[in-house]
Amino acid sequence: MLQIKDLSLVADNVAGGGRKAILDNVNLEIKDGSLVVLTGPNGGGKTTLAKAVMGIATPTSGSIVYNDTDITNMTITERARLGVSYGFQQPPRFKGMRVRDLLELASGKADLSTMDCCMYLNKVGLCAGDYIDREVDTSLSGGEVKRIEIATILARNSSLMIFDEPEAGIDLWSFAKLTDTFKDLHKNSDATIIIISHQERIINLADEIVVLSEGKVERKGSKEDVFPSILAEATRGCKYMKNVEAN
Amino acid sequence: MNKTDLKLLKEIADLERVPQGAYNIRKDGATDSRSSTENIIIESKTDKSGIDITIKDGTVNESLHIPVIITKTGISEMVYNDFHIGDNCDVLIIAGCGIHNSGCETSQHDGVHTFYVGKNSRVRYVEKHYGDGEGTGERIMNPETIAYIGENSFMQMDTTQIKGVDSTKRKTTIIVGKGGEVAVNEKLMTHGKQIAESEMEIVLEAEDATGRVISRSVAKDSSYQVFYPKMTGKASCFGHVECDSIIMDDAKISSIPAICAEHTDARLVHEAAIGKIAGEQLLKLMTLGLSEAEAEERILEGFLN
Image (tube, rainbow over all chains, first blue to last red; front, side):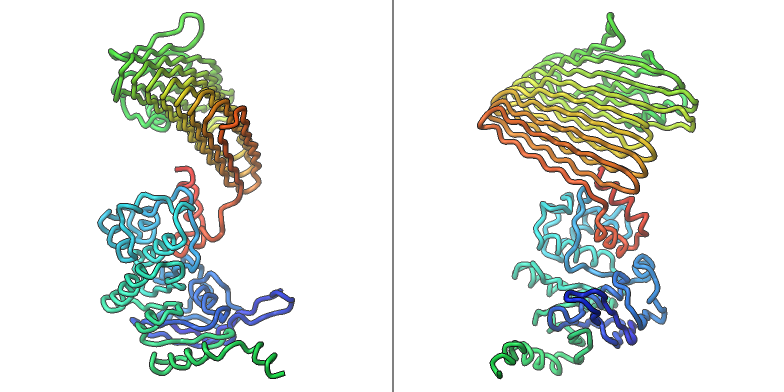
């Protein structure tokens, strides 16, 4: 189980000066083997929360406990070795490192077979023959790099997988394939899956939806409970314009 | 050959035994062993130190190994090797120099390799430089490569210096003829207080000549690197120079590329970048379970691969 307790992250010197709570006393419990979709408006703190779990962002206060181990002060490497993985929203590119190299590193197998590489790439809608020996550099499009990033998380096969907006930059056809992959992953493995997403097709897969807004858990629950309110929120319009119109 | 010799040969030429095909192994300032073949003939120069290599017209799928090793401290040599490659050839030439210096005197190898490549030929020239040894004596290598690429011929030059050379001053001049092409891949890593200087001039002399230079380097500790790649287009041609460097610790790197057009249809491009390892790259590999040091090593290994 992943337990996030009273987690806050306050940033100094934000635009316009002063301090801002990116995460504001977040409390969450995510059960083993569940698929949780983390959603909410841009800038609501979703990526920061995911990065705090992975150890990339350092919280100001609170704690993160994974399978009864307090990981709050662990390094990224220690958390990775404990079973936490995170697919970047904007993955970095590597000059000279091939797709095969990244998949090998992710799987922890220096002799990862071409067949295995093919399987992981196929799950994200890429043909291994076209990609396996290509460098993960600027010659690949944003969508291609993103799909390779997701393939590395599949190859890592951790007990906790976090995907940060996996749909971003991916075409509709590949996205349909990706949705099936998440569905199969949830059905056929014991992994706990957290997906940051705004897509209804992904939200449909969730056991639980968590809405994060202004650094706080605004609401959480099943799709039936939470989704209507997300739609209502989306059509509510711009607060600023409403104020302008009212005056 | 002793263990030190074999280790050097493994490092510079990936050799574990006497190579197949033609070879000339030079050790401590003299020829150690040599073998010519029907199509690749190696002869000693009579006027100065070095060898003349003649590769007959139509020689295909053959290789030539010409490694140089220095295992004694205090040796300093200057060698001239000339390669006369005929028409319609397809050959692999593996050179390289390894110095093991366990003494306190400087060991130095300076060499000039001159290639005359005929028409419609393909040549891959691989050159690795390596140094080791526990001595305080410096390990110095100053290679010079000159190549004349004939009509419709292609030459690929892969030059690598990864470890153990205290000082190197490299000079490369390549003249490309009509329809010819040269591709230079330079890889360099310096550490400690090492100094490396690379001066390169590619002249695209005739119509449809092509030149490509990809230089990747890593400078660690307080080492210093300077690059002067220059591409000159004298006809309707295409040239591309790309220099990429990773800088670490207290190192210094200067990259000074130049492109010179002497014809309105010369298309020349250069790109140069120097920067440290991107933090996001380290983070990504750490999320895959690597420590920071392991992540750094893998990034550099890939970059220089």
